[in-house]
Image 1: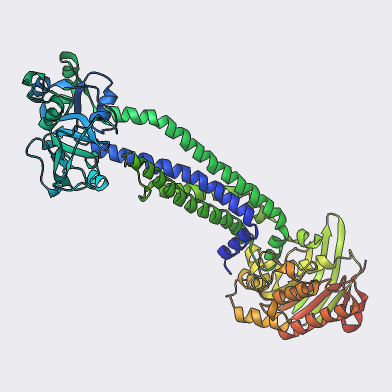
Image 2 (image 1 turned 90 degrees about the vertical axis):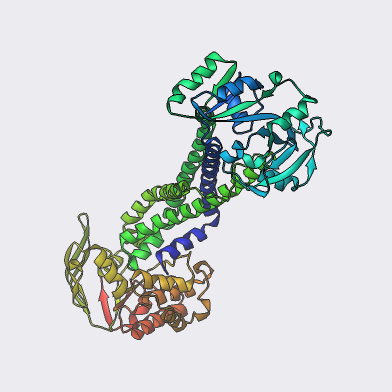
Amino acid sequence: MTLGGLSLAYLRARPLASALNLLLLALGVATITVLLLATEQLENRMGRDARGIDLVAGAKGSPMQLVLSAVFHLDAPTGNIPLSDATALSKNRMVKKAIPLALGDSYRSYRIVGSSHDYPAHYGALPAEGRLWNAPMEAVLGAEVAAATKLRVGAKFAGAHGLGEGGDEHDKEPYHVVGVLAPTGTVLDRLILTSVESVWEVHEHGAPASASKEITALLIEYASPLAAAMLPRAVNATSALQAASPAYESARLFRMIGVGVDVLRAFGVILMLAAGLSVFIALLNALEERRYDLAVMRMLGATPARLMGLMLLEGCVLALAGGITGIALGHLMTEALGATLRQAHQSAVTGWAWSNQEWWLLAAAVAVGIVAALIPAWRAYRTDVAPVLAEG
Amino acid sequence: MLSLTAVRHRYGAREVLKIDRFEAAAGEHWLVLGPSGCGKTTLLHIISGLLRASEGDVRVGGQSLAALSGAALDRWRGRALGVVPQKLHLVASLSVLENLLLAQFLAGMSEDVQRARAVLEQVHLGERAAARPPQLSHGEAQRVSVARATVNRPKILIADEPTSNLDDANCERALDLLQAQAMECGATLLIATHDQRARARFENRLELPQ
């Protein structure tokens, strides 16, 4: 017999009320857990994808669309830019490194990206198998692409026109797989890399004049902090190109998503508070049924402080159980969400990761339980034994 | 073992208890007799330290109850006293055995399952250890309540109206049980009752006037 065992016995004596309170609290905690995990992982993932890319230059249009399409490969490109303009920008002395990107085709909705060897090098990606591309029509698969399509080194595949499923296949110019990249945990895992020339070759059927050559975007690393102040304005004002900052645009995106996240988080908090209220009412009702028990416990030698502890512990045990159930449920829900996103080739979220903020969430759940038990506990503390036993 | 000197208790201006001198030696069995409302329950509560007398000195085993305060009084009560309340008041959420373990726990004794089972055997409830109080008959519940009151080997065993609503045979059985259990742990027994059937069994009687 311990105080904890006694609390459990009382919770078991009212299984329905206890289970309902536990469930209510668990749902609130689960909602917040999902938000916590999803936003944290999404921010981490976007941070990794955008690391070291100070500026994206591409065709005029929405700057957010440019960043989404060129850095995160989520949206359609804003259009193409002349290679000559891109080359001129690359040679600007404020640019330390410029990575060209040529988009347009896909294979089973994985994007085929024409670029230079700087692109995998930027993410520290090395071939796990084979080598990088050296000639046109040689392709290197991201880790996830290789796993999903089962293509190996030596295989051939035909790219489809467009970035979605169901475009015309370019079956006259098949790609030849020469390498598979090791997993990087970045957007690279979901891409098929090749040379810029391959993309031109597939599309232009014949030898185009070098003046009409185009690419989609340029990922730029600044040469000095000064460039941050000058280069974007210079690009936007003086050329046909548009410059967009991944850091600024993703912050803007999170501010927009943030409203929805805040609403959901408030919903989770309300659920938790409702659970607290429900626990409070349950304990207060239980106190009414239990006044004889409490009086008898005093008779058997319990101090008022111990009875108070019993009530507090009961709220605490219920809240802790609800919190742990909620966090487990939240992880399962996040994993389910992640699995759905993975089907859409957006594997940013997993339920099998722990966020340190969850400790705070658990602490908040227990705090809700303790606060809910506070008034019942105080009344238990104040129980006057003699009249209760005498009225028996 | 138990001595009361010049004890008075009042609710507001109404005096409900007046005992000039009462002493009970260790191991003695006493009957506290009187009609309903004569202050029997008040007296029991004063002896068990649940109620402080308005005036007077109450000593148990030489210990003055007035000198004990708060938590110390609660601990003292758990160890030195066994109480069988009129309404028995078993904890319904716990099994019969757990009700006895609860008494050990709340009195701050170490858990002794063997002792608890032995006491249940003494009151012939060894096989009902796992039962819940609502499943028990009144007689069984009373025996559990007596077992719970004696599991810590108290110095004083107190029973409030243990024979009310019992037929003659069960009345005898209840008194037998209380006396046997008091003897087993060498406790002074104090039975408060208005039941005249008990009178013949006890030489020691404290009669409270109306």
